[in-house]
Length: 255
Image (cartoon, rainbow, N blue to C red; front, top):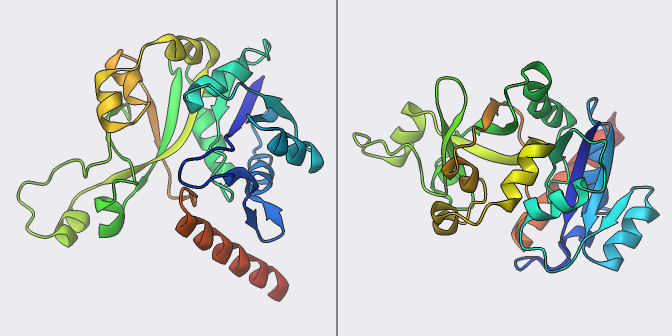
């Protein structure tokens, strides 16, 4: 079984009650669930919730939810908690609950390496950065990877550092910067092992969970995609998502 899990934490520090924030006539978690459910490769899809209100909404639109303890510290720990309740699941897909319009093709592309190569145990996504604002933003996580598409490092800083570039525009135009898209695919054993490891030094410095894997010698296969996903972390992001949805609805009406 390939199990997709969407963590939906109600008490987000930057946008409280985020899963239930309305985008058009639907809460964000419903948009995310409906987008992810279009995947061709997922066998089952559930939402990992920590609040009765979110659980009620998920069941209300026909989804499936699993209640998790409020004191779970990280998204990966929440995913592992749910995965343990599905012993038949062999591959676990961590789909961020705050990406309401994630293309299902992105999910499938991330899963494929584990289906084709038994030596690959963890995969994720990356997209080429084309703007100075994304390159400079600490909210956009950057990733560098080797010639075999295995991750070398993740950072909120602009990596690689281009020593000879004079301007930021020159950096973006002449260097391949990639942003990390926070969708992860794990074989269950690797997910369970990962969540048993203590927080690592670089993880604490950068505030990036995935560095714990690299610091402990795990390989993460990086799938490069041209597709993008709109992430909602702040009130401004929510406004952008609502405007994006309005544009989509207008285009549908024209068709």
